[in-house]
Image (cartoon, rainbow, N blue to C red; front, side, top):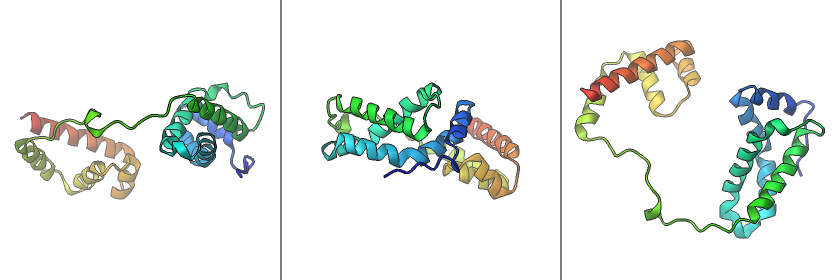
Length: 177
């Protein structure tokens, strides 16, 4: 059973931070309440629709964040969230069960793989980067966040952002030849 711990975990403040544009506050709310929403979805949809649990949870959080400004703080946030999640999960049960599409019917939105000449141009441009830039480049390719990059190379976030912009310009120029 979910136990509310709002006094030490200030949900209302996190909601206000999210509404003010702090996406990290939204991430915190998802981490905190993800298990609650998941348990509601599992209970409402049941095991026969197990393959739709994740989709339903995502749809509920999308709807929740779109309407977060409607929470009037007349009750604890966790109780409001649980009611909204239950109602949205019930709405989800009214939709017909989805059959997964065959892989051949799913459009591949990725760009086609670059040709060998383009890859060589990129490798040459990256090979000319200073060692610190190369570390940042490798972290960027691996999907690391900019703050993580700055911490790893011991530079400011702004410096890392400038480096990345310059590196991307140099790679773009190399590719466009």
